[in-house]
Image (cartoon, rainbow, N blue to C red; front, side, top):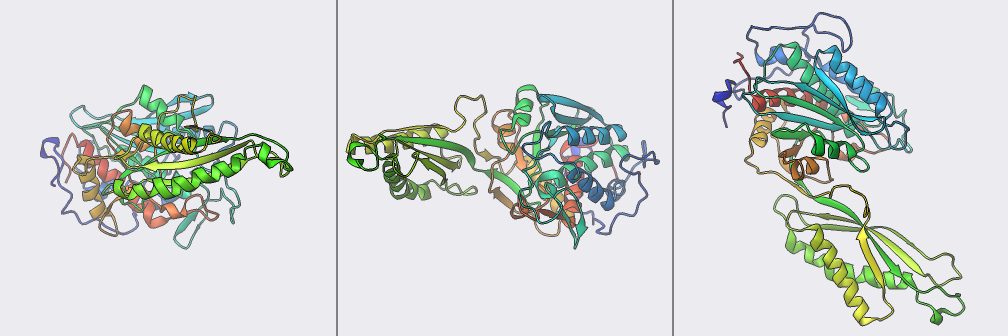
Length: 444
């Protein structure tokens, strides 16, 4: 598991990382202060990391949280995208916008290598869920008790700040990478992922990617696929006083739910993936009928269906069709239609994510997290779906999910991220890029 000698990168397995708060003088995020640049000189890893202080990582996270970018805003991510673009410009890092949707840009930044190493993408989404009923000012970014609070602090502006400062550290230190390091700040992950779909279709590409969703800095090497499915049960409306003249779609829907729960879901235990686990099915929404005095002429069930790599979406739909067919053969009055929730759109299928556990990116993160983290890094499955699936399945970019914060703290009334997680995220992304991309010159 040593570093790749042909990329002239020294092993950091024996380096004892200094856990102190960085004290090295360094520039403000957008100030004109002198940068710490050592072109032509050898620097040790602590010197590279010390070009960005912990305080800077916190402040950048707060600044990103200060800028609302939640679902439903007009030009939702535009303001935060502009801020990120200005940050990279101030660090003399190549940066540009992509336009997946009008006035909702992706932000792409690149530190170009010499062409002799592998390229790495650091990807995170710019959007957040709405503030709902948050107990504190959702956009304060306040720091208290070792935590930073606000909407998006955990999901996932903290990770964006760690990625941005990792890029800044490599630029400030004058480090010359062998392969390209790419930052991708993408739009609308919380809805339909148009930002990452744009990258899939138009680039940039990379040899591997880290998506910074909150894993507690464990390495999520896979997750289930996710699709919403609508089943519409069709009945016959009549007056509530003459129910035998109609067909109650709600009653028929109850029969369907019972059959799924008793005959389909028990089969899931035999489809268990060793890392990702069993398939999941949740009845999330049910709507039927017009008013209490009418026999319901329709009932619509919306299902959340999550599946491991051992299943396929086409197979999932066929199973539901089979159950509907069995009910129809037993009851001529049973009629139902099943379709993908987003049928008719060009949205890519949300397939499962899986990466070879021996992939060089997994090995890189294991090495760096052993040094930068507070515990032995674990290889886990991420409970939710992420854009890493699109990068892996459609762009052919092997991807993992690894980021600061814990999923249980995301989307909550007091969303927060631990400062220690931000520190570890910054260090892991910086040293991970050094290892995976390789260096044009050795460093001490």
